[in-house]
Length: 516
Image (cartoon, rainbow, N blue to C red; front, side, top):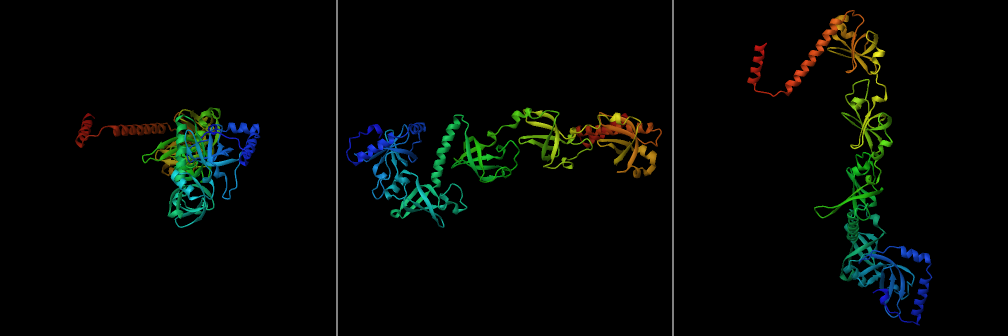
């Protein structure tokens, strides 16, 4: 029934005076208040929803009370609901009340105030049961299987599995608190009343999810606030107000997050963006959210902060056999290849000079914006010792160095950090005889003579001052190294050649001998 459909008569009794007084109160509302009421958006009207409104009229000739819910909607409520058990009028025109929608048609919105009161009749309980209306109740006790609930003046039972949508581990967190419940059954004349909160929560969640899905289908960006309720290594579950969203570890930050517990804690308040809503094979709704999606992508403006050829500070985050990953800022990580770690020595594994958590200075070698990759260098922070080696050590110069290692073909001698030369074994033997190993074992110091440079391959051939003519030995060394290279080449080609039977191999060998 709409407000304009009710025909009011002149009243001279107390009820009429009450109405006139109330109308005067309504008229005395300030202009600012009226503007504020006009600006309030239309409330969501559906059966079972809780609404708020202002009593605008109390009829003297009927049992109707009009409640203005907003500028468009007017509800109708039975007059007896504004009186208490003693017959005293509790609510008057101009009072704001909260009630439940018990019926909603095109012509009429019926309201019930009593479903939100504390003590009511069995008739209201049955109405709430049949119409599945939420009823306010208080958790007053606990027993073996659940909780005692005081609801509409009646003692009810709520199983522990029905108090929440999640598994309850601590009953005390619910004690003394008020919640909305749905009545599941009424038996034995009201002595056995069972209620459920989880069923109501699921219904409310379904409505919220449906609303979100509709907004998502309209390509709206939906930002939600939630609380972290559960953590897994691969992500976190977020309570978004009665339903859960899943936040994958890859969607927490642009920075690398290995485990969710490294980034979030249970109970943390977070703001997330809705990514998608899916329906699983078993009919459940799966909601994916992201924290990263509402953060600024550091790669979008990386050119404003980093330049090729310049040096920056970073932190080692990971070590791999091929290099080390260094974070310059959250979300910006680069690779220092193992070949870019040191001028001074050959690095076999990054853990020889680095460990996770180290603060290092690196130089940017290359920025690949599209693939979001950074190439970094540790050694280029310092000058390349080979850049001016020929000026520092000209051919023929005598230099003292430290033996790093002794191999079958000679001794490696470090001239300066990062620059190592080789003294061939034949020269060592000519100078020291068979005792050359004692003279040229690490960490012995040797005086050597610069003989040849190969800057491209970063090699220096050394001799000893005792040897006046080492030309034959140098030539023999070159021939030996060439033969070793030829052998390596043959081995590679042989390994690639197709294999035949033993007879084929033997025939090929005999043919080769005949030709020779």
